[in-house]
Image (spheres, rainbow, N blue to C red):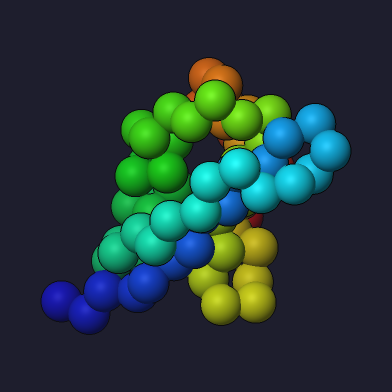
Length: 68
């Protein structure tokens, strides 16, 4: 199965990156699940596939803010 290297960026109140990671996922759903399971102490986390924003969610509780 082909894996895609998604990017996870977690941001603080000033929109500065506080954490970044590469997530290997088979599809958007798997990457979102991996990102939400990480639970970083951040205001917002974003999952990117190259230049496409996949989703944005609350980094404190993993709740989706903006879907794909």
